[in-house]
Amino acid sequence: MEENTKLNSRENITPVTQESVDDTLQRLIGGGEKKKELPAKPTVLIIDDNTILLRTVKEMLDKYYDVRIAISSEQAFKSFEIKIPDIILLDYEMPDMNGEETLKILRKDKLTKDIPVIFLTGSSDKKTVIKLLTLSPDGYVIKPPKKQLLLDHIKMVLYPEEYQIEKEKREEQERIERQHMHK
Image (cartoon, rainbow, N blue to C red; front, top):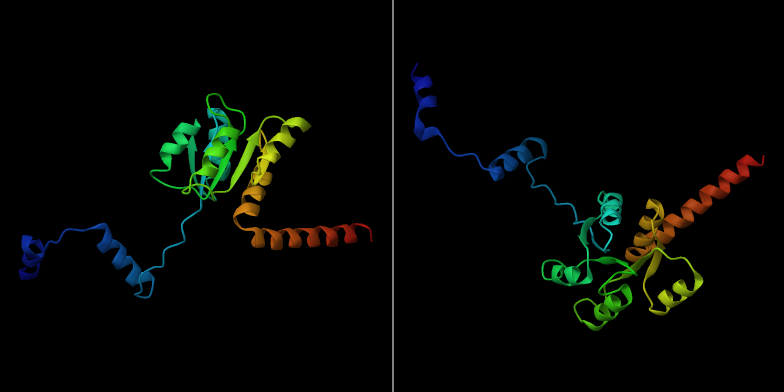
């Protein structure tokens, strides 16, 4: 009976915090050490005036990247006060300020000049592609983008060595599969 009184006494109650729960769980399942934090996902900023495309591309990339969106270049520039992205997917043809003007502003600013930019364009005609390439973006993807193609372009820009190794492995696997088909 005396033990019951001690358990119900207010002086034995301590508030539970998220930190105390995390520490207790870590001790119980993690061998007593604090869990190492996973590296942060790279941040991708998508700038496009088409909200449906923004939502679609965001859903494609959310699993792999910290995805931010902006419906205009002006909104994107304001977002840099909060977070500088690791890479930008930029619509080439937008009202107000198009992709070409936006890229020129990005390249002139010391804070944003080194951010890789991949253009998103709805036009695949030769004249547009040539003009787009003269701006020296880090790549371009025709809209609507295919998920794997977009992921490959981003990875190729952010992690060129890792991308090359994976590409060589895929090509070798395809070569082996072709050989087995012809036997």
